[in-house]
Image (spheres, rainbow, N blue to C red):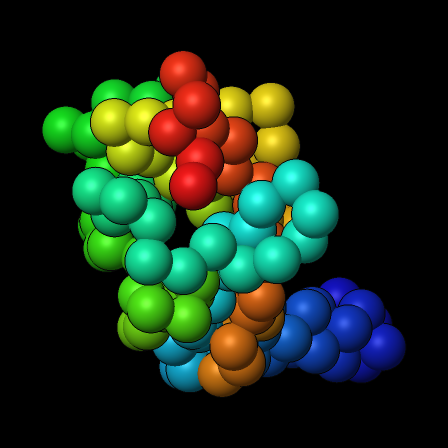
Length: 131
């Protein structure tokens, strides 16, 4: 085996090990979901409240029992999910009076390590529930 070939193999081996270590040492990500009305205004104090369900798999979307986490929308129209892995997530805004069906419901790719990743979704009411 030539010296160049041996050095190349060592370089590849070390690169693989270092890239694997980098992934293991990623800082957790935070996801901030803002729920808005059709005009882009944050929905605050919604009657009965709005719950955001967070899913890891698209196939689980819509099944609250399979949600990774769920949180109520706060008074500012936001929900914060801290300490998440750097993967893509699906989310659903749901209440007795409506949902975000037909709006964005997936993050823009994997979350960025160590950062607050921000998404928004449009919540539409049914049966005249929007105040």
